[in-house]
Length: 271
Image 1: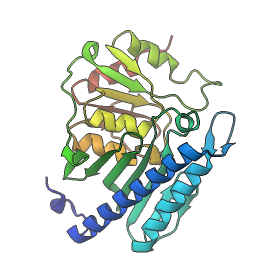
Image 2: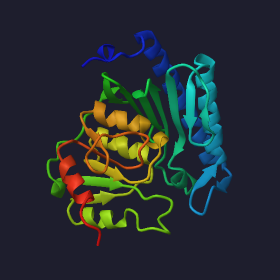
Image 3: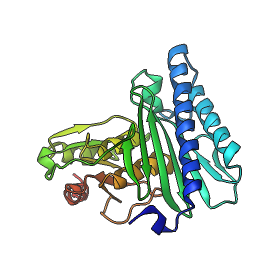
């Protein structure tokens, strides 16, 4: 199915959105790298959830870039929340996905920008400034990494799959994902935990990971990356294998081939 057949905005509008989103993501990435080199201030939202001045300045730059071209578009951003707009577009922004990594100097973080049109994500960009990797996904138009098409992996069984997951900030008060991690660890070829969901999804899309699951995510974590997965030939679902929504906290992302196996493991009885 082509993008034009899906009741999407005019091609000119889509091209404008792509231009603004890519330029904003690159600008925000430059801001993050500037802070990484010169230093930054860390504040605590709670015991484990951090925010830095790099987050806020990155987000401000993205919001301003959007406002210059699309002043009537709605914005949902991690740090400032939701802002008005009467057009049927919503920009969903994570100015620094992987803040804890960033705060510790661990180079696994990214800028994530997704764009919804009438409730459906139609465009996504994820920019990793440390590797200069730009992931772009367009509904009906495929997904790319630095301009080259990407596709999910071909691993067909969990014993040959490299999986990735994440843990919520409340892990100190609930086992949450630990039982699932143990169940997958003895069934998969390997397990990783990077701490940046947008990159986890992009890595599934380009075949570096075969599957990803997590239980407590937000729309800004998944809006752009989930489109990357589906446009690269992968599959998204909730934890039961049902329909995926960026507004639901649980997800499974995979190459499609190991998806049902992941659903089965994720729904094993707790021990």
